Every structure is written in C-alpha cells, then in structure tokens.
Image 1 (cartoon, rainbow, N blue to C red):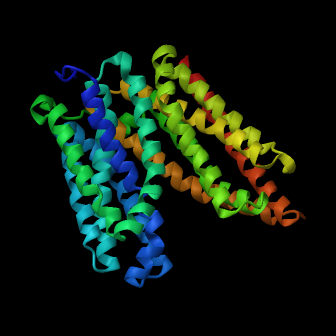
Image 2: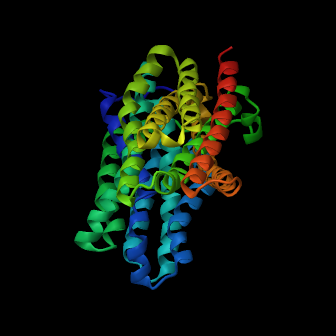
Image 3: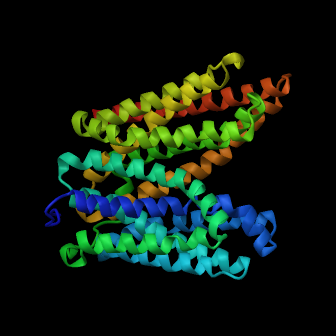
Length: 402
C-alpha cells in the first residue's frame, strides 16, 4: 500500500494525533464527574460504575470488528465516521435526562472510540515514511498519555464552570476540529485503496511474531494496571499519604509516559523496533523488581524511582512493539492487526485489575503484619509477580529477535 500523496508528513500526523487525543480523553474525563452525575440522576454507586464500564466494554467488544471494517472499507473513511459517531454520541450524553439514556449514549460513544482507535495506528504505517514510523508511534503514545491524564483535570474545571453536561459537550468542538483535520490532510479520495483482507483471524494469530507481540502487550498492560490498582492503596495505607499527595504521586506515571514518548520513538527508528522492545521490557522488569525489593522505610522516593523506571520502559516498549507489529503486518490487514493490539491491551488492563488486586489483597491478608507493613508486603508481592511476567515477556522478545 503506497503512501498518501501529501506534501508533508506533519499534517497527517497532526490529524491522527488529535483523533488519538479526544479518544483517550473520552475514556477518562467522565470519571471525575461520577459524584456529580450520581447526584444529578439520583443514581446508586453501582449504576454510576456503568457510566465508565459502558464505554470501556463497548471499545473492548468492538475494536477487533472495527479493525476488520477499516481494512474492508478504508481506514481514513472509518476514522472519519468514528469521529462523527463519537461526537454525536457525546451530544447524546450531554442531553441525557436519565441514567439509562446516559449509559446507552456512552455505549455508542465507545463504538465511535473503537473506530478511531482501530484506524489511527494502522494509518500511521500507511501514510508516513518508514524511517519516521517509530517517532510517530512515540508521539501517539505521548498524546494518549496526555489525553488520559488531561481528562480528569479538564473535567473538574468544566464541571465547576458549566455543569456536568460540559464533560461530554466539549467533544463537539473537539470532534469538529478532528474531522476537519482529517478531511484536509487525509481525504477519502486519497484513500480509495481499501482491499479485502485475506485469510481468517485464526490464520493471522498463527503468525509467530504477531502472537508473541500481542502476548507481550497483554502482559505489560497487566503490569501497568498494577500501578493504578495497587499503587493508591500502598501510598495511602502503607506510606500514609493524604489523598492529595497520593494523587500527585499517581500523576507521575502519565507524566513520565508523555515525556518519554518522542525520545522512545526516535530510539526505535535508530536501533530497530525489535531490539528496542527488549530494552523497554528490561526497563519495565527493572522497575517492577525495584518495587518488589523496596524496604518498608524507603518511603515515597523509593516508590517514585521504581514507578518512573517502569513507566519509561512502558513508553519505550509501546512505541517499539506497535511499530514492529504494524510494519510487519500484511498491508491489507493492518486495521485488523491494530484492532488486535487494542483488544489485547484492553484485556490486559481488565485482567490486571482483577488478578493484581487479588494478589495484593492476599498479601495484605496473610501474615502477621502491622497495617502499614501489611500494605507494603502486599505491594512487594504483587510487583514480584509483575516482574516475573515481564521477564517472561522479555524472553519472548529475544526469541523474536532471532
């Protein structure tokens, strides 16, 4: 598949990055408004959980099908439709008069988000020169981290100024900007290269390099979820930090990922995707093992050191692994591969949240420890398991290099 006839790669990359930004914000911006939404709709806590889960489950359940549709009908076209569907569904969320309406609109919003996610990564390889793919993947990783971190902060400001409806209505102007950028830099007429994907999904998964890359991605996603699930409990119960201090420490991870994205992409272009994947996994494993061996008296500084090393390695791994998987894929099936990548990552997040929380709880429960020491023991046990998982992924990456 040839590159699109554009004068500069910066325009298409800007359009793709902006689409990534609004989809990543959509997954996190509603979280901060849950208490306000519960009061507005007189809803229970269980009902409010579905405001978040509806979006995530819709993305997870549909992203693979959206990747297949992107290959079949054209990735630029599906990305544009995804932006429009996401924007219209956001309007539906903002106009909701009941909790059922809001949850239904969030499901539709998730479908639009899945269309955007499945198309964006595949288009990077399609429209940019091969020697800039790593940097582009690094930039998209940075933008995704910024969007995820920006969502709660922006959401809090919007609620204070305009009410809960603004959490969703902000996507209308943002969606129009994204759609305009796509129409200008990635017009449908230039993308009329859609081809029918060949072979079945099972035959695709039988490809050794792809299966290993997806397995590594799932494992690393499970490990990253450990920092979000276990981290807050250790910081508050083990280190006795205040909620404000805990929030500041938790913000370091997305900040490191955002800062490391572009340098990671440049390193991918310089060293090669597969070798850089191994370097990233080694850094993630090092961060996990540092946290697993953290003595009780190390305090917040020790935790931050491990967290920063782990997150920097994650940014490097993501840029390298995404580049390797998409550049190595059949051009006619890159949308499907992109869908598999997003599906694997989301399943890793879900599995990580369940497994790592259970391991932490077991570590806290069993053993004669004081409350703060029990939390420290649970944290170390969980990250020891996480480090073992990443070491196995590292061995897979070295096999991939042979």
